[in-house]
Amino acid sequence: MPTKYPVDTVLSNSERIARVWADNPTFTLGEVTLKSLQDKIASVREKRERLEGLKMQVTALSNELGGEISELAGIYTRGLSGLRAVYGPNSTQYEQGGGTRTDERRRAARKKNGDPKSS
View: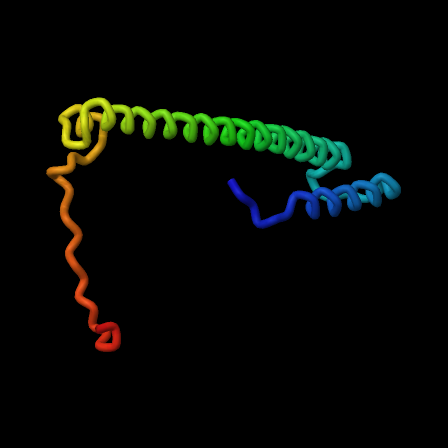
């Protein structure tokens, strides 16, 4: 869940409070103790490190997936071209492979040129 607080800012501010608190042991903050504050800071640091490690893994896996997808797309293109070469562009096999048969292609409509200067 995203937070509106920047992690580095909160950590540095919390560490500043912990340093001042350590120098002034009579300071109190209700149910929060210096030890619990230090433990929370350590916990946040550890979770941030774990999250950064996981982000690195996700990036690496995403790049690997992209490479394999590109390779697979190339194989598909070659396969479709092979079906077209062997069976012809109007064949059932070419259509079954994902191509559009020549007979089923729509002819492009001729565009009328509205520019009188081009005549």
